[in-house]
Image 1: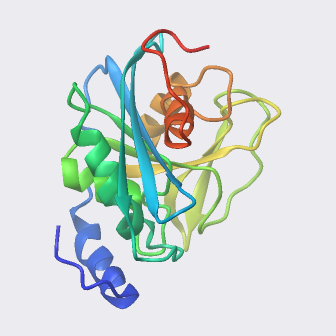
Image 2 (image 1 turned 180 degrees about the horizontal axis):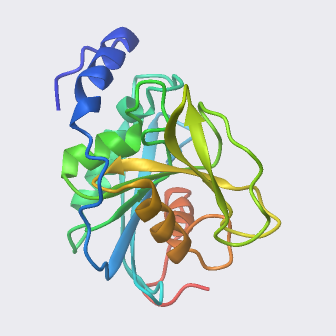
Length: 222
């Protein structure tokens, strides 16, 4: 990745430089495992990132790791990768298995410069990556039926930048977008396949718990 001088303007320039490198077509065979990553801020300075591997189709817990890092860059909408990616990358590198499919708690193409944190991590590790955000950063969409797996296109200036997906009836939908080496339909398929009755796909739900300081047993987690 290009060296960053720590300023928001340079961060935006890097995103524009790297965005054309994102592959928007699927390059993913049958997946037996999926990794979820999330990060939490701690009370004093450092941030903690977690990477969790679950098996498919049973969603059994295979491995999980955490990493902490100091950050000096404040939260700036649209520049999440520069704050979170180093700690997330450190957690991923500690895993006992190489990630084959990555779900990221954040945006991919559904980003003003088409380069959210899911794109950043996808390019960094050169693996199929999906952005899975709890809130919308940009774009417009119609209603989503209250049925598991239902979805509608998320569009910005006429371009399809992702999908709004119902992962649990009765809960708000998730904003799913391409990170790298997937297309929108493939991203929707794997997000829904990784759900187990919660709004968040299981790898992201467990990563959220681990980043928050909860220990996970290396067994099936209900």
